[in-house]
Image (tube, rainbow, N blue to C red; front, side, top):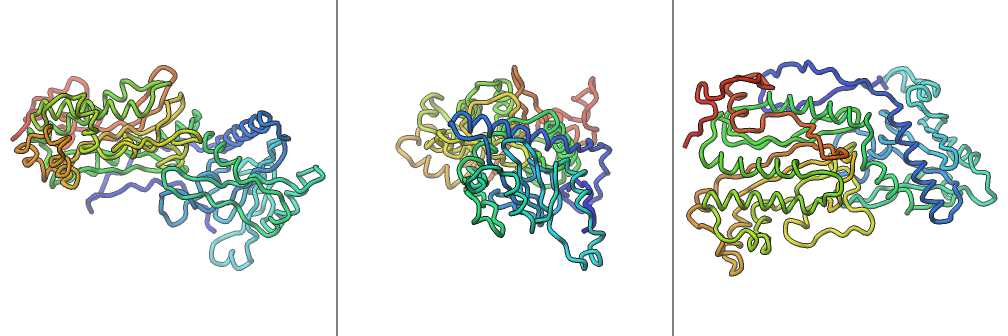
Length: 458
């Protein structure tokens, strides 16, 4: 197999040529995955000690990407990528819980492989490249794993098996010839490894930041002519992703109605980011976004009545049926949103939240409020005896073909607040300026009133 090269796929909205990015990707150091393995071993050892179990056993993982809601040709399974950073297919990995010793098991390739796919690399290549203690062939796995375990009973394997609360799928535990000769634990590894992925290290943040930078560039360059557009896309770099949504009028000028809805969502987006810090509950952030949007719709005479009454009747879910955001990392929808014991809310809108956790330092989470005019939601709400009084029928009819607006940024939780990792035009004047040809980021001191920029059109 020819060695893979790092590349960033940039979605194209049109066939027109897109300028090549001038951004330089950060160097990927495999120490990142060494640190990830150390974090897992420390957490497993602590868990075993707390539950009065022997600190022994082997954590095992294989490479197929079973449980995520992401579909591609070949992309390494996310938990395996987190621990080892391996790019090639058909590998297995193991970590000795007692010592932290890490082992990769590589497929034993036939001689014909070299004819069609390139030089067969020796095991020493993978030992050096992926910074592990040992690399053996897959057909040696049973023998090697038994040799690590010094107890009198069968060797214990902690296998990855658990529910991905975003996709609704289960991770499939590793399976190999001879596994029946081991004791297996299917319940311990998944929740602990999932929690390890929730808080990001400095090295992970650098990669996510680059994915955001390249995605931000793509959002600015893929602007096109047409209707009001909503682009939800993001680049991936060394397994770590970004997720950015921009909404804009494709002809470059906001109408009064477009401005009303867009600014309602932007105010919700900015209000949430301003309130984010460790200890803040994500359900409350979702409700804050709903409240800001409802207040703007009331000011625009689209709805009427008491905002608190609207919130009690869950009117916000009519205009924003999805959750406010999701954890982000190796998966676009990173796991860990609902650890054991945390229940998913049942109310409309809130039931769509991908997490109900309190924010912690080092989390990366998307902030993506939206406002949509969906007849399948609006009509029943306008006919309901509990919510019909809130709607201005004539205004709603005016917006029935509007579609919607969503604004999404990737946000890193710091010790005192948060940092927005996304850098795209957000204010209406910024969008109009960029679509009129201004370079991004816009130079400070630019007269935004020139050439009609910043003015709204009916």
